[in-house]
Length: 439
Picture 1 (cartoon, rainbow, N blue to C red):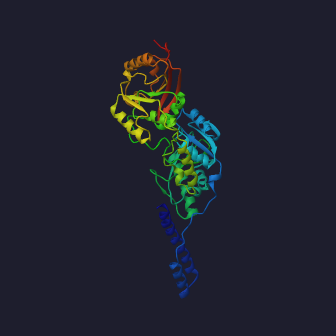
Picture 2: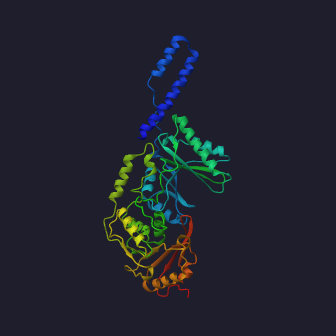
Picture 3: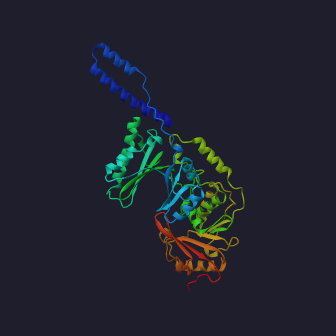
């Protein structure tokens, strides 16, 4: 269907070009001969404008940026290095690395903590909005997309002198579509909801950087979620929190406020080696010259590397029966068996260890999220932890910086991290006999 629509739009452009040439012919010829020449031109088959075949981008090395939630940069760095990617460096809100197109596809398939994979296609010093236009116009966008695609451009800035990022975004978009119109006779339509090509412009105090978004929709969308439950955390944040706790699949994992099951499902996917991008439609799949065979082979190999069904030591409880119903449905949609994650409807004040000591990771109700500032509850729950969960490694993400004092526990470690736009802390407590108690 995309091919047909492209042919139609390009035929229309060709007709306009032919008519223009005929008009010029009429100014230099006269009489019957000129009319015959013009008529033959009008009746001649219209030539389609075929996009010029450009150099093969799949063999090049690119600078790539992988953004992530603030606070997870360190564990993202470790993850990217573990995948064998080159020149990995930590930055603000993400990490950069070098990769060819195979590495870019692999990152989209395998990276759990990143929000998306952005390929740098231009970077220059700029002074005016017109410089943004000129830089956008210079990029050979036709290598990846053209008039047959729909386009979205997003602009963000940090310490930039420009007063209107919206106008900067407009100039960037104009530069892109003007180039494609000049190169191919037509331009892509703008679609801000479901575009088939996305470009990101980042502005700082002195320069502009254009990125091609190879992910499409954000990578935290694993492809299974329908029921979000009440105030969930995103899947890539859950993966990052699991990494920060040091959890590994051989250790039991328990979430006493499991909600719709995000943390538990993410842990199960890690344990079974299910790539997070396996069921996620990715932006680069719609690009021109996309290496389809290589991509299919990469996914086939990933499926072959799935770990055999071994018992998972992953447990969740919640007082909310509706949330547990959503969690059970999510578990099935995530391709897991109903009994691979053990769920129970239990009040957190009545919970007992589901197994030998392991890791507790939870996202309990708190202030901005559920307007629940119940200090007596936290003291009672603290008593449960001290009596029942000796030897467990306790990890709680919360925006309430006073939570340790409410629990009367001294955190061994606290890590700033953002849950969406909400600034939080991941508090770590070690439950031992005389557990860091602040009486």
